[in-house]
Amino acid sequence: MNEKSFSLEVDYRYFKKKILETTGIALDAYKPRQMQRRIKELSERKGFYTLKKFWSFLEKNPEEYRKFLDYITINFSEFFRDVDRFNELERKIIPDLLTRTPNLRIWSAACATGEEPYSVAIILEKSYPEVTTRILATDIDEGALEKAKIGIYDKTHVKNVPPVILDRYFIRKGESFIVKENIKRRVKFKKINLLEDNFPREFFWLILCRNMIIYLEDEIKNTLLVKLHNSLRKGGVLFLGGTEKILAPEKFGFKLIGNCFYQKI
Image (cartoon, rainbow, N blue to C red; front, side):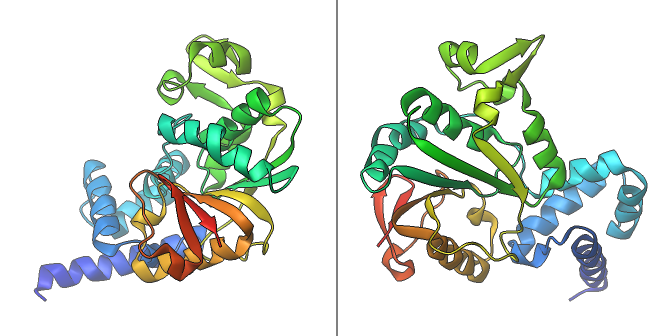
């Protein structure tokens, strides 16, 4: 290891320690080259060529710190992201689950700013209004959760929403779209660290954990899949992102039942 690469490693270790102390986010859980590259690129875009100087800047600028957390926790989302999969959820997965239980407990893990759980709530309000449902939506980023509770989005976040759904479940105010109260009431937001906190066992019928595990180291990813499996009822379903796959799902107690959908066996 040359002197430059050594100094980069020391710099990154210092930065990881500070992030862990202030947020509880363990950057070691994420693929190291990918995460280190993302942070280094952001630091240099802000004009800082050491992570110690970048950290000092973040400490003194709360708004920049919030933006940084959004950046490293991949907090951009949109309503009905991957429309075909949400159609499958509405037309196949939820009807099948309703043959098993009249009371759906749903968890949107790593919910970012709320687009995903609100998308599920819209499906339920539109197609299954008589069904008793509870949607828990969680994230590690408290700033993202506060945005989610407010429920105001710009047009880039609702580009997949048909006009009839926008008219029925959103209030338009200028260039913004506000989620209506009947949709908000279906969702409860809470801070949870998926990699550190304990989850309820055999409680949920549907868990959405999308576009997160792709960033995790294999050992951490496998541990998380076991925890998610343990939180599902038998016959419950795990909904992953479009680029995420479980290799040998039976090893984790799942079977593939659709594109991105895994059922607990």
